[in-house]
Length: 147
Ligand code: DQA
Image 1 (cartoon, rainbow, N blue to C red):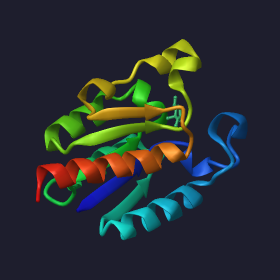
Image 2: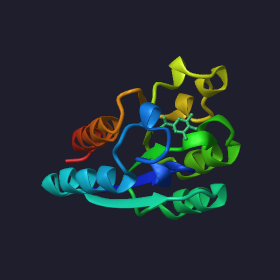
Image 3: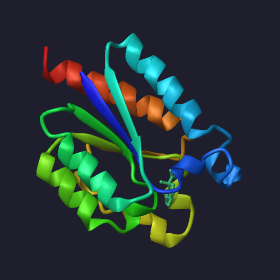
């Protein structure tokens, strides 16, 4: 299977950025672990981080016919982006929304997501492990739908 991992703005600063909220792991640490996990399951993992909304939209568009599942931490775009929602609807690739922090325990504006209602699932508040659980869930879903 082919799985695309997308990370939105400021996630390149993990490790440095508000460690009390987002943890000590860097994005490199997270992606290294995910790549190992993917290899063990014969999953081809592609990772893209961008601070730019249009780059995330383009990455989603280009995954049509190339990716079987998307894991996305849209970061701040979660709460603002109709464009990312529309791109995900356009390609109709199943996806899981991941957040490191518990967005429901923070400012009110973080409680609304433009993506959650069209996601297969949402994981938040479990830190870097959330990506691990999301990859596990995506592989299980793909294994039960295709043989
Ligand atoms: C985040 C939560 C968002 O509200 C925030 O804008 C982020 C990171 C998380 O992983 O907890 O940048 O998506």
